[in-house]
Length: 185
Image (cartoon, rainbow, N blue to C red):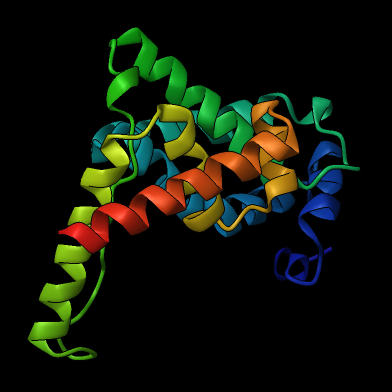
């Protein structure tokens, strides 16, 4: 198989190929997931250098433990679990777990939006981040996984070991709190 031939394969198929020793298959998985993993880690640890290092650690751990990956589950969920555990271990080691939060990283160019729209969006994202600082860590993580990483409630439930109903309740309460606090300001 040529290196460029990995593009049509699912993550799960690439993981199987990587387990069989095809290094280009794992390289394709890294290429596909490096940006979302880095983004997740950056929002959790709130430090670019730490997030870069943790992203490398995440992919090294994934490669090392590829034999433990269950191909019946989405690869993305498995990888996000590794990334989150890596980040939480990092935060625990530095006693920063309580400060892990969503960091709105608005990459908005002035060419695409008026200066007023850009300023309004940044202000709104800043207010949202302040509000999210006042909810529990679990609620922040659930909110981030749902709305920043695009995971389904089922995936979040499995990932965090929480019941599906608890995930939905956390999301509902967090959205309601955001709605209330943003309406007041």
